[in-house]
Length: 251
Image (tube, helix red, strand yellow):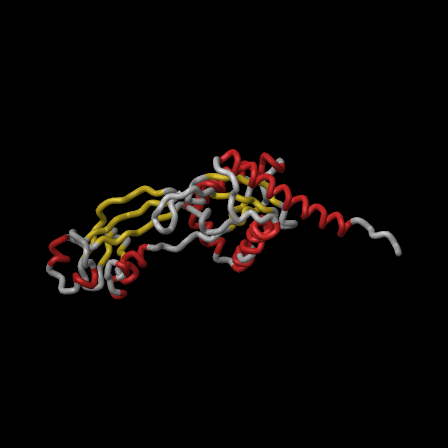
């Protein structure tokens, strides 16, 4: 897998699914995929295979909360709870030197004419669209001649070879409903439990079982190593629960 330094080295991505009630590890897997988003649906399949059912809710972090996963999970008998990331286009524009006055939020949209107006009054007509997973991205671009003659070009589109472009995203109804749901206080409280649920099993594997790095190479060997560590964590949980429910002899 590629490292943050840009190099390539042997790495493995461990996927752990944990029960919220007791902290029991319900399923695990190892991959060599850097991105987590494609691992959610297989993880739900493993949980269903191991337990005979899907959980009522699936609590995940932003790495798994994509529009595609929202659509896929909506077709399954489990409710997805997660954090759908915000649009990162503004940070990209800042890196390109666009000033706050000419950020997309400062452009006025006119639904009747299906166009935008820039802060200097120039029109950006509709040009094209791009179909995304769970959304349609519509592109609006100003004529190159308008931007070339504009004195604010260095602040608005300093690196654009054509006219300034603004994007508008129309999300699928299921994705929009998910965004609305996650703004509700009750779901925000549930999401705040994510670290507690996820980090319990990870701390057990790293601190109690010493699994900070794999001792083997190859997916099958690494999967077996992770499986033994997960089993050890679950046995420790089982022993602790047995001590709580087993009556102690009177002294």
